[in-house]
Image (cartoon, rainbow, N blue to C red; front, side):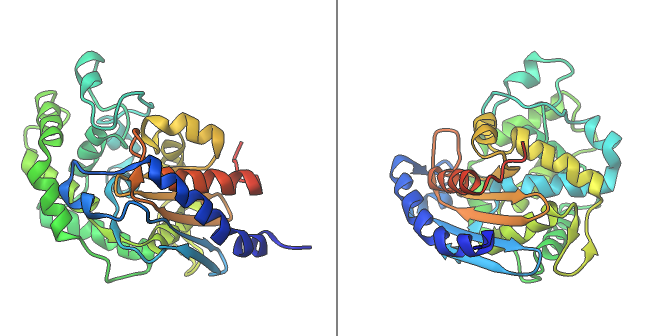
Length: 314
């Protein structure tokens, strides 16, 4: 009988090329100018299992920045630094139907804290909770965390993307100052320093293999099965995976959960980190995005795989 892994090896290249056709219905993110340079038709895929087996297909070695995918891991780091009470006194636990960069509910809904850590306002707040005396110390701790998660000590920031984000981040800057006005960011917090940390972790450059390796750690409840090291407490991984399922695909999270049933987190560079709990870590990149900010081809490929192998957690 053919194993699931053997079927994956056989089918993934074909399914990837079918999904690549979906790129024509999307557009590369242009509101961060440096991201507009990405190839619209690209689609890459990597999957790891816990025995170090790996399948790659398409443009799997393409380099791109984490963008919002980094929010899952800064949340984990903030939880390890501040605990649940410290984090959730500043951000909520609920999905929002608004766009990821909306400030609407910060004004309309009491007590004026971000609805969850994966929207921009929430991730900016979480960035302020990372331990460290300076922005450099905070960003170094974040980068070191990613080195542990990926097993790659060479991982670093894409300076061009970081500067592009910094120079055009008028809405994020507005969000941060609104958070300051609402006292979500305390009097001692320097808004520009928090934004520096936020833009830096969004601009960490990776490949699909990095995403798949990080996802594998989440799939095994915070333990890296390749090294046996416990990197994150299981409870905090549970929290992160819940947010991924309910909020990880922007305001398309419900539809993606119904169609795939996989915890996932997307970013506007076209990356998607997904996992099959207890089995696989998955990394996808496809820079052409739909109107919600998710990769058109990447979403199609993940939904195809989940349907074919009954990966839904429900």
